[in-house]
Amino acid sequence: DGGITQSPKYLFRKEGQNVTLSCEQNLNHDAMYWYRQDPGQGLRLIYYSQIVNDFQKGDIAEGYSVSREKKESFPLTVTSAQKNPTAFYLCASSISSGRAGEQYFGPGTRLTVT
Amino acid sequence: LAKTTQPISMDSYEGQEVNITCSHNNIATNDYITWYQQFPSQGPRFIIQGYKTKVTNEVASLFIPADRKSSTLSLPRVSLSDTAVYYCLVGDLPMDTGRRALTFGSGTRLQVQP
Image 1 (cartoon, rainbow over the protein chains, first blue to last red):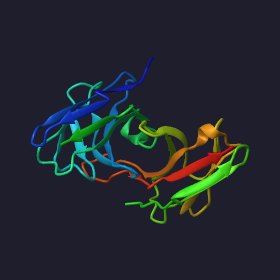
Image 2 (cartoon, each protein chain N blue to C red):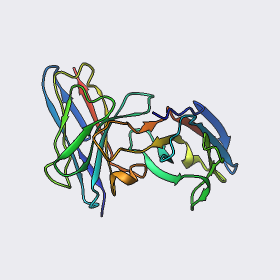
Image 3 (tube, each protein chain N blue to C red):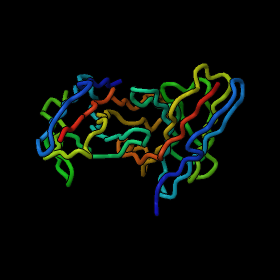
Image 4 (cartoon, each protein chain N blue to C red):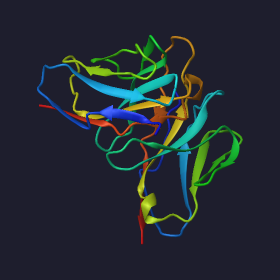
């Protein structure tokens, strides 16, 4: 089955710790994205990558970092510099950045930092 | 940055047609309009995408007037399982290093009653 997987589904961390969220896709898509969603809110773009070894900041990149060493993988690190990291994190991919409107989303990771 | 405005919520009954309108006054020439459906604690699911006039697929229709400053998602004969949040997405990603975020609206919470 083709799709996007995110792990884990739930993640708990203590304040001050960095945490890395996994995102893998087997759709052979070039572009990948990370979003953050707060309760009752829409999605906000954190980072996106149009191609391997390249990525750009979205609207709320501060306190986050990413890497794109493989086409299939786009992990997101939530650093201790992120002031309010508790949120629902969604990874997505599209065939190319030119088709950014048609994205396929993973099931999400709910991060709780206390 | 194309900001979108949608009604916060809508109510309907099973079997009725539902029309959700999204306003996007600052839409750019290259922007496509995309609609997504999201159930609680899940990633959004692509519904339909269009550029102008009318687009129809097996689940919905999208109407876009000539000035493209708004769009209407039409769901024919809704069922209880259509209860979800619907997002209007306008924008695209640049091919250069300029940062321009995709804009998800605040979403419309559709409640379908028996």
